[in-house]
Amino acid sequence: MTRWGATLLCLGIASVLSVSARAERPAKPQPGRDFQSAETRKLEADEAANPAYLWLEDGRRLWRHPAGAANRSCESCHGASETALTGVAARYPRVVPGTGRLVNIESRINDCRVTRQEAPAFKAESTELLGLTLLVTLRSRGMPRQVVIDGPAAPIFERGRTLWMTRQGQTNLACSQCHDDNVGKSLRGDRISQGQSDGWPAYRLEWQSLGSLHRRLRACSLGTRAEVLDYGSDDYLALELYLAWRGGSLPISSPGIRR
Image 1 (cartoon, rainbow, N blue to C red):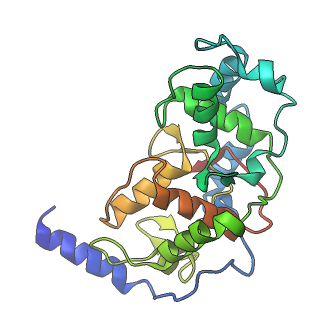
Image 2 (image 1 turned 60 degrees about the horizontal axis):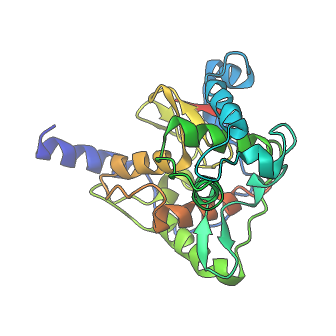
């Protein structure tokens, strides 16, 4: 695409989106699946057909398998995957006590891998990390998130709220312009959702793969022609915390299917 064509595209997108000065919970939070086609919703609901469950099998295998110099498995500390860590994912992302550091499920898994198993951290978006993340997240399926946004988490939460409202990239768009003010409208063949995180990690048809919430945030950055940050960056973590709070009473529904 030429520079002039990209400019026209940016102006065209901006012209159909109104500007928001809000960054609060929607009056009625709606899960991401509500904005998908009937066929996609059906695929998500069928565990035998939902391709995300292929990654779950990898997660179960890794859970049982001893690793690292410590020759220790996840199961040796936490118990069987069918019963371990119930409700834990609903409390993430969270600040590690005494550190001021916000971690999500992925970074918590890698912390355990390095410090407890004495093994190398998994790479972002690797089959291993996605599988274990999905396994842990499923143990909180159907539960609303209960993240802490005060105390040491307060400045991080406020950073996420500010990022939600901040115009970014060559398109000069903020998250709130799409996901607060124009919910339900069509853009590039998609229905604009509330931008909720209830279904992540999710299988995205465009990717033909399971992906993390941070991969989706990176895709949004790319779409607005803004700086694409690293997985686990402070800004994406802050947005993840804000989104977890913004979902209110929405239950965790991962693994979702998204277009």
